[in-house]
Image 1: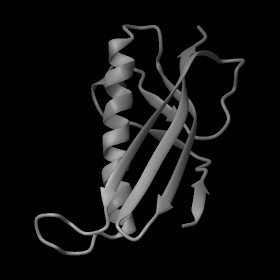
Image 2: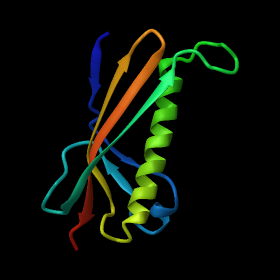
Image 3: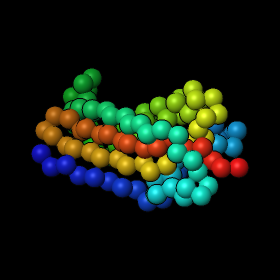
Image 4: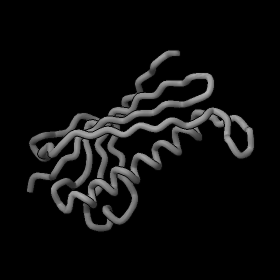
Length: 117
């Protein structure tokens, strides 16, 4: 098994109710700590089978990554909302993946941050 690391260096916005309120962002490049205050670090992980259980069809890496990304952003949204204003979003997102014969393994680490006013 080979472990590969994907570090995305772009600003991405997470769609959802948090954006309508003016927050809910993900910085995937290093954060500018002149404008952001770190609140806490966190991580998520997920394993997705390489073969769909219901259909028996192969699952592509792109499809597995899309599922992970969707689930991860939903978890981040829920966590930011649960913090009740202590955090506005996340920065320093780092995603790692590993592919084995039967599973795609994904993990992400990130920092919850608050905007400096």
